[in-house]
Image (cartoon, rainbow, N blue to C red; front, side, top):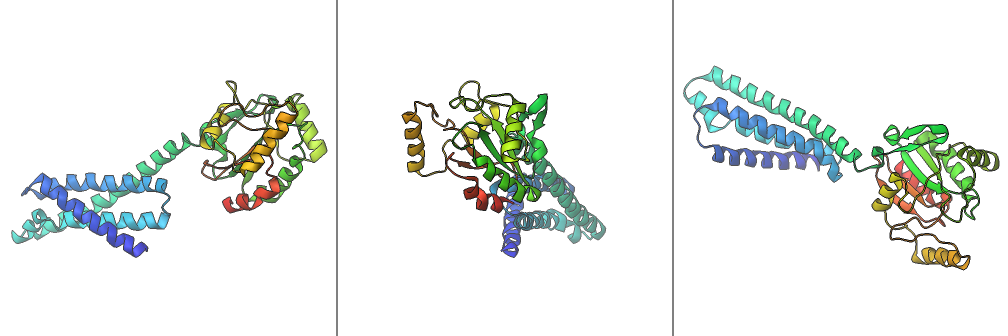
Length: 306
């Protein structure tokens, strides 16, 4: 497959260089084509740096870039302008041109890859959880970009909810996978039935004493409405609906209505306490688990990310 990508890239690169040659005309000054070679090689590098956005593997991207670069620079090196140097007996000039053309092409591809990769990372950060900073207990802050490379489980919790025993399962997940790269971000939320009373420290003490949690709790937030934490606005936009059977979603809503409780009021809203978002190692939201989905049921998907 990768050999095929090299040849494919070589063919495309050669065709591109031929097309550019037609556009610039039949110049008899070969050094002028070095500028075309440089710009084309830079474009190839930029493309290579950005190709990761399409989900291509590192080896596949490298193979394609090598092919593109090889085809483009080789066609530039042996263009009719440079070959004219040989027919005129200017062999030294031809050799110098050939070496300079290939070296320049490789250097510009490398520069383009560097620029494209860095630009890709900056752009991706602006569309992932890494662009957010959240409040921790005691006035601290957590810049989520510090968690790059880790899988995240983001949960809105409550200490007086029927789902509160899920803390036990969350702690088991944390104990099993933390050393492999899992972090749990626990956001207490009192929006649903006022089931998270108390201060941040009181909630932390409750979790540590009753469920022996070793992951920390962050500062209490809102997840729905105008006062929703910006991180949660992003999470809901990324995954507007819980990944759960319609029967589970309808069942919880019926149960809440039966007890006069309100959950989600607008499309995309968090249904209730213990809605769980799974984030991959690149900061992308990959799953949104319904409150009725137990931590144990998420273990396999978490392991796949690690």
